[in-house]
Length: 298
Image (cartoon, rainbow, N blue to C red; front, side):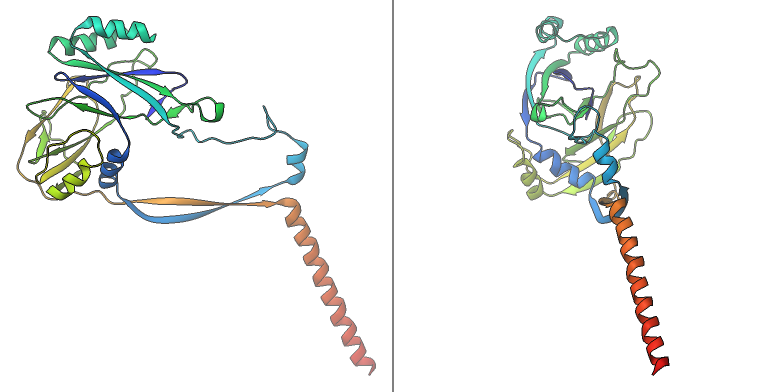
């Protein structure tokens, strides 16, 4: 999820070696997400709102008569294109200049340190689509990017350099990483980071997951899916996953979903209901009194 996507923006992704980049559909991401964050029972809520027809007719919304509320988490379709730039500084500089993007000094230093260690840079340009001619929302769900490269071990660059538009003392967002390997893994660090998900994946299930991706996937045997939720640490910019002893199955508690139901009751209609109710009770009371008087006369 990205914030502040009012115009095209770029993503620079470091990898330990030359990479083939492609933009995927979100089917594979949904399949993995359903395992890591299973949905629980659905709960319904009722939100009763009292409105006024008179005020709606007397007042108009600012900007236009028809007012449409758009969720801040809307995710319109996006166009994205990726390019492998290698580990030399010149291609990255040329790509940034061609696209009209800029880097802060801290970002440039972070990229140069990775390139000095032999890491390559993959650049992705993301073009948010404007729904119905409107401006893109302030938050945007980014594309699914597939990076295919050879590596001796699962490794991920988790560094989060300070951005030019971010406060100096702000905390970087947390990171969720899931790896599918032939053996159980843990993070190579000074502290023991426990996963929130660890479960065996059979060969048939692995093959089913591979059909969700258009990239070739040669992993066909039984494996282990392990997911970690960690805080980014500037002192440990690289995450390395090392083999460990098999651990018991760890699955998160299914998250219940809430489906809200909104009921809008006009005050004028409520007032009319009260008036007719009082009128009906008065008629019943008068009718009962008349019948009682008739019986006394008889």
